[in-house]
Image 1 (cartoon, rainbow, N blue to C red):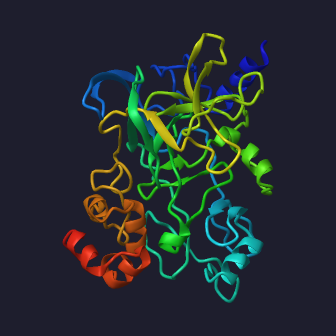
Image 2: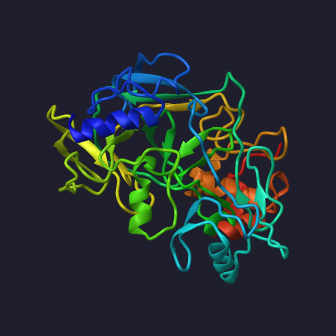
Length: 383
């Protein structure tokens, strides 16, 4: 058997034994059966440019059957957690361990107490109590919780690429796990939403998602000299990882013959031969630096392409966010963030860092580097 096809078969087994579809465009068999709540369906959809289109609609579980996750935050300085892409002084990708946390403390970001216990909070059920805490969300395990995603069947090139900012929607992995761009920076929020060594973590709504091309993340660890290994997902730098929300396929960092891709555009994609030999089509490749995802999307995504049944978090009816305390939902800060010209997740996390519902807006404004008057004018009324 051809080496690539053999690897793809192994990857299918590792990612819940799904029968995968043609490479270029998604179809009803593109995502793992172990992730689907119901069979995929073709639906009418509207692209963000206003065009009518057909989309594959996927309804998936909060986590696929059989996918292990974690660790995220270490309990103490003597434990080892996941990874984090630190973007301050001494920037780089790090394993979350004693050496890294002590380095952050030397820079003014102390995530542990005098006894060496790491400050950790569960973003799904509580807010932070200290200035600097590691975030480790817990999964929502109710059987009726689901995510719905829309992927255009026939990709349409946009007039210009769409940049992918913090927590921007990137796509869906073949294992049925959503893919998002960079997690919020510690520099913006004071807190660290730790990733496991496969590049994923739990949303405030209680579902797991990727912030990296997990099937090729060991390439990044090797390139950036990080002592970490993704043990939960089979590694294959040639394999298809998923589909971006514009409908184009996403592959590992090398071609099917292990050659480096050539002619990549600013988004990390190109028109090139598909690994199955079926012809040429536009597709994305992961990189050897973190996050190893497309930096922008060249195609047009569908309107309302991501929703969840979660009570809070990305895609929920209450908007992006998490609990202001056990059992409570947050206001939707999307409109406020848009008015201020800042990322909605950065706004949300700054508010959490200053006490959630009781946050001092002057302190929130100072964290975000914006004026207090502008923040007060943009914020929704307190509940």
